[in-house]
Amino acid sequence: MRILRAALAAFFMGGSTAGAFAFSCTVSADKSTVVVKVSNPYPQDTYCTVNCHFKVPGGMTSVSCTKTVPASAQDWVLCERPTNGDDYSKFDSGNEECIKP
Image (cartoon, rainbow, N blue to C red; front, side):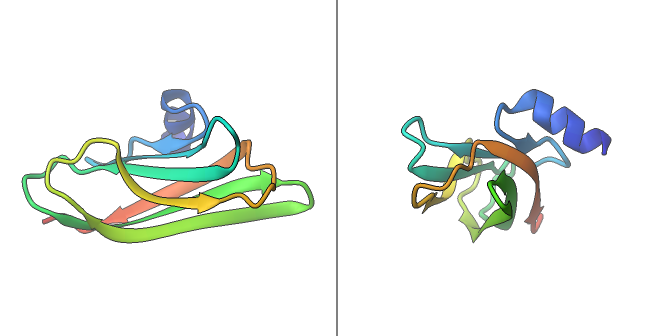
């Protein structure tokens, strides 16, 4: 729970400071896209999965992305997903799983 609170304080709209990897789950300015970013502090490529959970009218929805992240990448776009007009403005929680090289 402390990690989630720190993450919410660190990233408006969501993110994490857990471990050496950092991620963020944001919505584009025009609200058409969820943008998931991750940073890789290591000098080798690494494989990451990020899950972002949002409260939406009528319940919850999630965006998940998995991809290889380049070495030493900062705020690298892991994926972008369309909102299809849904309201993703209320980030709830998220997590990352990155394989340490």
